Image (cartoon, rainbow, N blue to C red):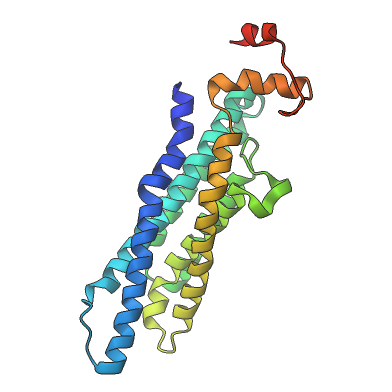
Length: 244
């Protein structure tokens, strides 16, 4: 495999090694937190240690960073390949600079969101992070499959990332809200995010099959040039040899 292929596989590798294990642990801690709260209300005590709440919060913060990180890696891979293949830096250098600044803005805004304490600033930095992700996702070269948005790996992933950013921004409000309104919002949105992550596992597997590796690209281009489909098209052996 070439370096380009290794970078392409970096996104799913981090998802498998980091993101999905974190999701499993976070769901487990969330169930323990709820069980502990119910036991405490019923009997005044619980065998579940109070540290599960802190662990749930900390792991949730890590998950937000990991999800935004792998989304940025996926965008960077697609956008850089498009810039390289189409020589965008020569045709429109300011566009390349703008895209680079967007990546910096997304990372900086997420970092400041972690540091922000006031509600106003948390809202500002969450909005800036989300806007940067959306604008980057609209750039040429990003693998979106808009015609099939309802089963698109891109739309599932971007929506899940935005929900993670929002959940991080309301974290302090959850503990300050005495009527548990923000807690209910947190539960509903993260349940939706969990469903999206499950969808990510399915759509991500399909995307790996659809996005060709470097050595496969010449053969895929032949299919497009001959306007064939995989069921009825036959490629001449000489064409394969010339592109091998």
